[in-house]
Image (cartoon, rainbow, N blue to C red):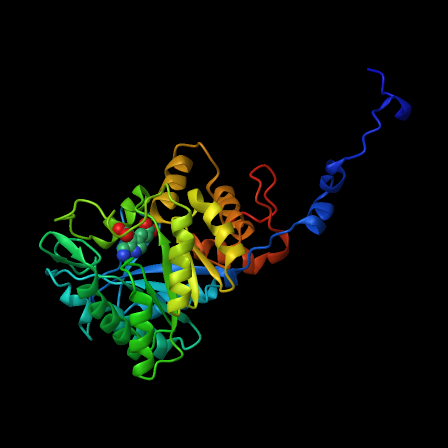
Length: 351
Ligand code: PBG
């Protein structure tokens, strides 16, 4: 075939492909760089003395006994993890979620163990009652309804317990009205002015939390059969901005959008609208979905991980909670300069 003379090519004004021709050019033009510092690893805890349990609904994830969590986290830190987010559990659940206020519960014990063994590890704790209530809700159930104000006092006491144990952040995920303000006030009154609050400000009533509820073994929901009276309607956007504004006004140090992948519009809106860091949670269903597709040979898991996490950053997230955190951190700390989200040309070495 005859190669056309330059004069025969079209005289295009714009040739964006010029900047994509080589890896070096693409590197120069890349707008978003993920860093291991952006990642937060969610961890599930069980009482001391048990064996670590693999979580059937979340491939590669474990429930860590409190007496082994520091060793596990030392391993994650070696991969580049600097922050973990702890989720508790209680085999004995009751209507008031009393386990949440037990100073010997798995979360306060794990925070103390981690702070003693790994003082440089940044520790966040989840604040919500659902792992501890017999009805599976995040708040107190009174006459068939979730009672907002009765729940606030419990959440504040739970946050105080975690702060006393040494948590750097408390992260209320319950979606009760006014909880950020009540928690801030309680922490301050007790001298914990340096404990940060990561507010799950726009947390949607999502079907993508299924594998997490399995991981935590929360009770099946009684009373209201879903969480729609406190978590947000996935159809709403303005309401998210309102929730975010309330939480900042009440003292949130950072705000979160959850779930992540289907809610990137909200991540960008939050980033443009507020002057505090924005967090996003790549939830259990998103993680499990990618694993399931990869198992079927439908996509490359590693490429999907890199691409999905890069997109959170591009959308405006400052911090990303993800079950991929250790794997991603390991890649980033080895080869921070050569991120390449495309499946076809992985620039990051395969293990
Ligand atoms: C509950 C809580 C949930 C998640 C974090 N905290 C589930 C729920 O609201 O029912 C979901 C996390 C995930 O799916 O990865 N307080």
